[in-house]
Amino acid sequence: MKIPFEIWYPALFKRQSRRSFLPRLPEEGIIAQLERVCREFRPFSEVRVELVKDKPKKVFKGLIGRYGKVTGAPHYMAFIGDMSSPRVQECAGYVGEAVILEATALGLDSCWVGGMFRPKAAAAHFPIGDGEKVLSVTPVGYAEVSYNATERLLKGFAKSEKRRSLKQLIIHGHIHSPWVEKALEAARLAPSAANRQPWRFSIGDNSVTVSMEAARDSSFISRRLDCGIAMLHIELGALAAGVTGRWEFLDNPGVAKFAV
Image (tube, helix red, strand yellow):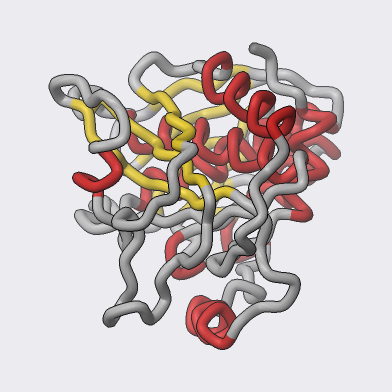
């Protein structure tokens, strides 16, 4: 399946993290389309997505009790990776963000959840192969019209409206073409755990390289997964500017290089 950038690129400007959902079920046609994308968008063999159409009663947990917990979601998606792959986290971020943007384009709401969920409870809903792990999940459905108190508090805690400038994120090179600017501006909008924005960018003559701000990955919520989300945004921005390229995965602390 080719990247439908004309659908996913506008969606990255609309996506919001939501945790409180209405009991309304998504229409069958919408779910069928989302299932199709989960099934057919497989750019990396080590990562797959499962759409679970059961209520995730025991999957999501709060910081303390129900505080910060996802509530009311009728469905959820799980992002599953083969842990034998050294690039599994970035691949999970890339693929997971793709299906989340598809959900956004379909009018659904979602929220990346990397820490406040129970992997074993999620894994009970679908087969898990040897060496596989549920790396992250997202609720799927229609959110409440207004943010509730918990959502507002978490939004403020994460400072999700405050993002670093490109000057702070570019560690080598400078913006020399419209496609690079569009790609990196899209990457600035990528979601990350607690809005930590762990990606840094190096610009070459015909490339953008993504690396982590820290040499070591997090053992709790992976920085490399966050960087994988930014990777997809970079590619969507480039495609929207009429430029195609390929990803080359790099050794730590590098993540990947997008070359055109």
